[in-house]
Image (cartoon, rainbow, N blue to C red):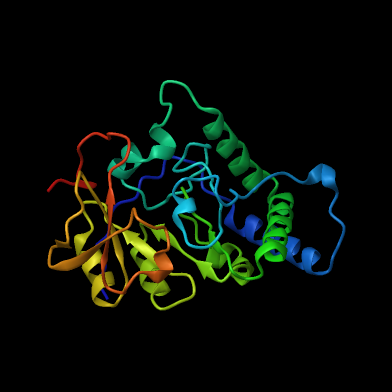
Length: 259
């Protein structure tokens, strides 16, 4: 299968994937063995239900992992990003003239994930256990609210928490692999990757397209659903375009479709 290749922008330092994966696995093993984890080493990791406007649109409590997008932390968390989607990203553009407290918190969290991966995962697992006690398995988990990491490789055990899992990605290969799985990934249209988008759509996956203004009912012959009404991506019909309205008055670009 031939994929259209969008040249990635890699400005940030690469993540120490092997080190993180090993530390995450060790944290999970110690968590399952009920090995003590001092309160002094814990820190908040997940975005709680109701505290994020987008996640709050779900029909079940939704927990999210909101890391610093792109290379905002100095580390690259969106390897497949384009210049246009980077420019339009609310996680970067908000407060451009001065960094907001939310942005600073995301950067601290991202650096802790990279530099203290064991403590990061132990803290996250404790929060997920609290979610499980509160909701059973009836909650959703979105691991890439602003990032695009391969969590199925980094920490596959996280998918045992919650009944619903979903994310967006710029990686065509990840989106194709996820079709029909318990962790469906909606491929993001970049303005340059339509051949890849069609491959995903034709195989029953979904594609997110950002529109400047009203969301149409069809786009390039495919049905469009309104993705702003709910964040329940796991309930979307298969083989459709998830239409989103551009937020925050971004500059015109190929990433945003003008009707």
